[in-house]
Image (cartoon, rainbow, N blue to C red; front, side, top):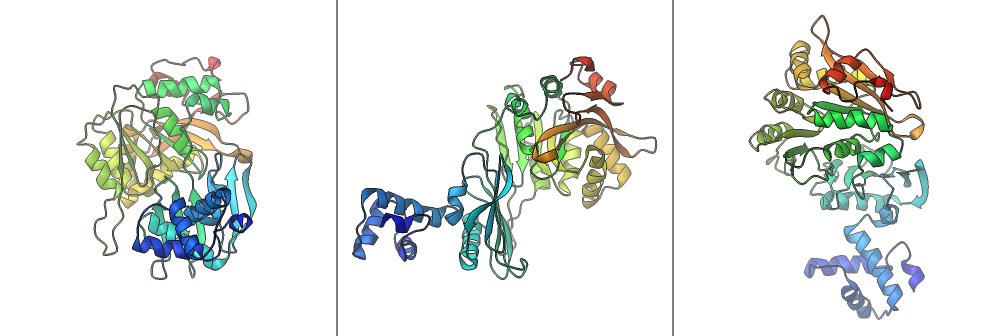
Length: 395
């Protein structure tokens, strides 16, 4: 009997449990499973009963056929329309031997969306949700997906990594870490840029852990991802509209709200829309040390990215440049050459002779074992109050 429950519940058991839960809500535990099996004349040994309970629990409130892939070290689980499943971990992105049929994939996508309080069906064939355990879910159904259901899961880190942990993993060297520490100590406003999966949120969490415990950090996110090991952190999370289209609270509104919460540092988890206007205005009202993350291919692309987001908020290029140049000072750009997450560049933001926003390289970290000071180094060193001014001692 025990072999029948390996990887999936006993035939028909899952449907029985769901029906039972509808009439008698509560935990999916051994007594419930034993009662339902006895009703069908089935008896399992202790080990098989524990396994059956675990499998049913995974399919009712967990990730179902993907649950066993959610192990420490895995950052992403991806189910494609053809039923193939890929994971990303320390070895990079690779295919697993798991295959999910079309009906099960659709059922899983719909259930996970509902678990995160979102609707996913033929009328609304895509959804973003935040699951109770912190997993970020994105699902797409046909016809938007030309094959079957597509599921993307971003798993939360088991624990927040410190700056020392990131240094030990080769994200940056010890001397560069001194510059990052000075960045926080000097209350310099910064933005972390990079592509998807480069570790922007992880680095931001590690840096915020260095904020003095006497300061109050207010974090604004679309869905809570930042894990900040700090004694005084307030998290604000946006809310989607309900099925009637009411109740939406966006990031821009949350940034305005946080100004009334006596923040020492304002953190926007990710700049992705018109809320960048409110963030820049907030950082121009005496709130030093603000920060956030931004998707960009290179540090040099950050001004163009900010301009595009500013346009969504009604800011033209010059207005955006005027706001950003006084609100944000430094760009930390992360890359992933060869699948390895590294800090590639530290740049300073400034306005050029025409009044537009530009970046200037302060430290080029793309050469292994070497730090190259750039034309923006003197400006960065001056802002950091002389901490680490001698670039010859870096890294």
